[in-house]
Length: 130
Image 1: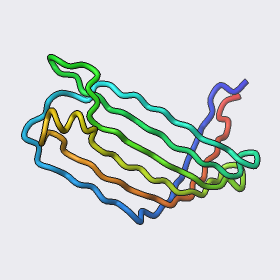
Image 2 (image 1 turned 180 degrees about the horizontal axis):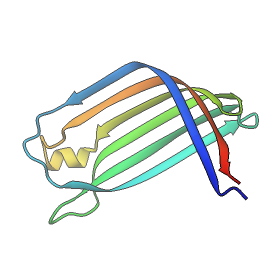
Image 3 (image 1 turned 90 degrees about the vertical axis):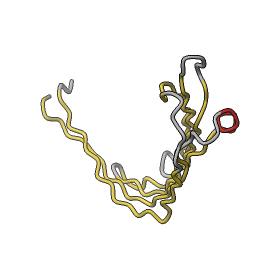
């Protein structure tokens, strides 16, 4: 039984896309207090090749409204894991406003954008106390 294990990750990457749009909001309606996230990944050839993604909905709460979706964040990733502890891949993430939020509260969204990255990730672990 391992009592204490040290885990580590080192990731190096390149961002060919880093594009964000910021707006000057009129005022802010509430706090992003809740979110729902769905994530899935498919491994092919015993985990050598992987493809996955996620979708996250952030929601505001105000004095009158609960569960008011205001932003969607989408992610996509794929790559290879040629050796244990080595991952080479690509990620895309983008965030966009939700239309009902914009229609009912114009001018109150303060960002949207996307980024992409190519990366190499090294990971591993070793037992400190067994």
